[in-house]
Length: 417
Image (cartoon, rainbow, N blue to C red; front, side, top):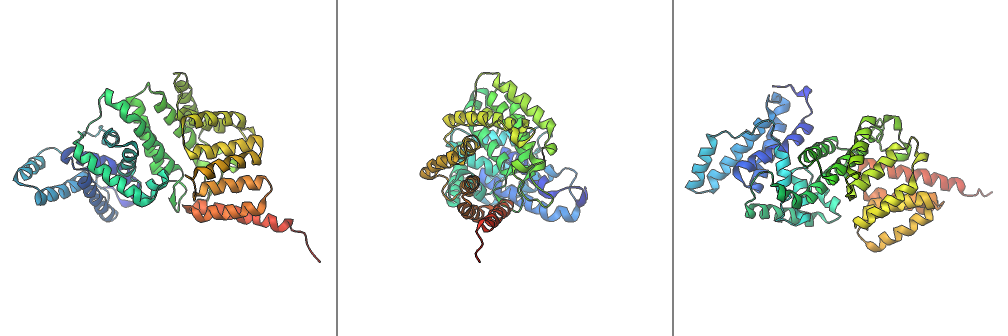
């Protein structure tokens, strides 16, 4: 047993959860029930491990507890034939070899082509990423209730399809890869900038996304977009040490101490990107990685090659109908052509409607209005953005920006006698 002080339970349980779920599904092929059983095993661990210590083989411990729950379920809900199957399973070896990564198998299984792309991605974020329904809904810009129904239907579809728990064939991988990469991208994003809660970053999520993307890259070493996504993650994560202050407060890119950036990750990311671009098939993740590289290679914020970033975003807009891409493009355009040019592009996002009510649209508008000298309007949008985010560090940062700009408006008011 490992004593409680030697390990961080939350990170360990999050890392093990998809591996345990994969092992249980492999044996019982009941997605929904297996997920419930694994949740019960995680709760049991959260209660017992702080008191008794972490088992020498925590993964096996969790699988054993979840298996007991599954056995109870099968015994109570199935006929004699199924009970005999369970009895046979109880006398067989249920644990997989230590080197086998069930998480990667679970990732491809959840992205089965029997599901719609959006349902596959939502289910995988839940099963593999451990994201809450609210967090997934936020990533998709839809109501939480809508996302809950989507995930429920996806589980039923997986159960009805009888999908075998194994890595897909070479022919099948292509049909699932796009969804797999999008899932990994969203898991990383939630880890890099958490959509809810007291912390800006969730390190365990971003690390797991990088780990799984490395695994997919090992599986498909010639795929340029897999390489591009891994490069994007590394180039972005390299800035993580400088993104928060001593109290966990948000530090924007323009204010970060670039000496804290991880140069080893930057070098690896640029090498991966260079190899990916040389393969001749340019995709969205490669373009985003190229933008990240331009930021990382600038020794000072003033050295950032904004015209090239604008050009890359314009290419990216042709490939992706993503409102966040349009929003970032507007920022880049403002850095080249001035705030009025950026604000004009935000009008198209207002008409688009998909970012209505999203705090980032208000935050960007506030920043550009401040650049344009429209301070009172900037304060209004900073405050509105602060009220709309569910991330405490972002809320605190935006509220501080509103107060700072508000002080400037007070100072600019002529004194009367």
